[in-house]
Image 1 (cartoon, rainbow, N blue to C red):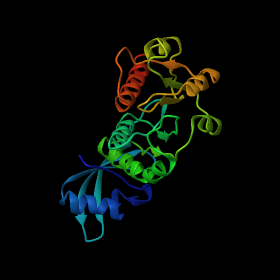
Image 2 (cartoon, helix red, strand yellow):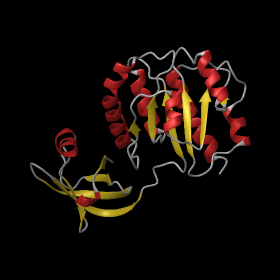
Image 3 (cartoon, rainbow, N blue to C red):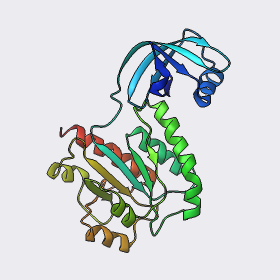
Length: 246
């Protein structure tokens, strides 16, 4: 069922009014939806509405609400990703999959071996945010995550506070995510920042940074993964570990 974000102010007396240009074009023009077809809507309060299209004009769509309920399409803890952006379409894949896996925000970090410079990253933020929006609709997320502006590891940790920060560093550690979570389970509501490096890996200076700041360095196993694969595996395994320890 198509899923679209709306504002609660457009929900009145058992009906939802869709009059923003983006949603209207998608529903009426791209999907060519008809009266009588169903739409799944969600507002900023994470209230889900199962609706049926009752009227389509040349500017707006009116949908009758059949039922509404609080969406459960979110994690019980708060997951964030700090990641060194990649070239080509690989970064778009990372942004899309991080959205599907429930990350609340992605922080593009400038690392010593980062593939992109600051000016290129800055120009791509809007595109990555749009990818998050589209992915959120497709996977029926209860909210839309944020693609933050570029930053560095030290600046990020100075400006924002997380309950725990973990870095995945192949070749430099034997501590697995499973062992780490057994000793220190992730708690409900906790803010967890996951750090993933560039294709060339972290530099010695950055490994020292992790050690000096008591940031656990974990491995995803014996296999060497491409950076985009590591993001998917890391976030997916964190969700798995949380789900099986609570």
